[in-house]
Image (cartoon, rainbow, N blue to C red; front, side, top):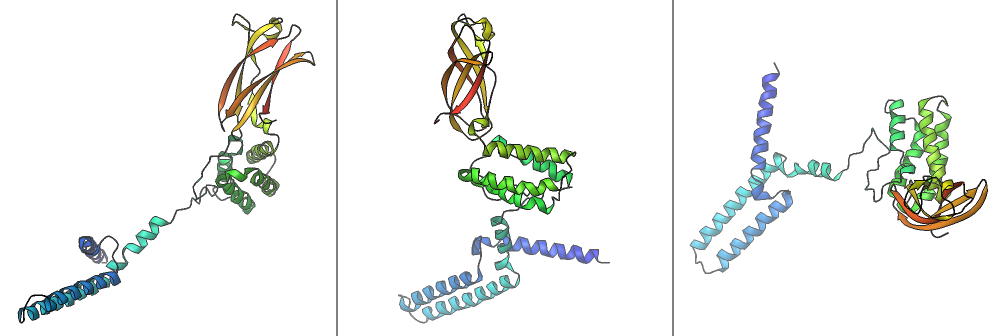
Length: 300
């Protein structure tokens, strides 16, 4: 029995919405009852002054003034009608909806405020947190709350990441106490822990470098032990999991465990998450049977 009534109400609401949207050319896109009445009053005063003090003589000036007053009364009644229909308040909820930023309750580690600089790979724990969230059916235990709060702060404060990372490591401890060490969830926890320890530690550990590939004087690829006492070339690929920083690459040559010589090569800045291949000339000692690479910050 209620279906016809609902249909009728829907039709009426649609008709009212169409009527109200059709008069925006009179009231503007953001109508306000007070400003509308103030405009009517101002226009009325201007016309009355024009007719009474202008060149128009009575009784014509009186008739025109009366006409303006009638129009003013009609306009005021029109404003009252619009107000009763809720027209002057209709846009307030829409405006609030535009200015408010929805929060992602399924991914509470995503900050609402803009992120000026993305996290370096070793500090980006989004995948681990997503996996842990799925382990708990999207409802992370309260032990995660301090960690998530600091993690969002880590994302939005690139100039203070070292201090925040230390706080994050402390906030991670309560999470470890509720996880089974034999579970997949604990593996995600350990990856987060290792990333934080690595970031807080030696800056040189933020980089990984491949073992050098050597080429002799004729640009033929050879093992270091086969290049005897001559100038060759070393090729090394460096991967930066930390922040952007200027680095130097050092290639060290060994005879067993004895360091024979080393060659330092300035690399320059490697951006966060960047992989770079470095190619440098090196002199390979005659007794060298192995070589390794060392990454050092350029400032020492």
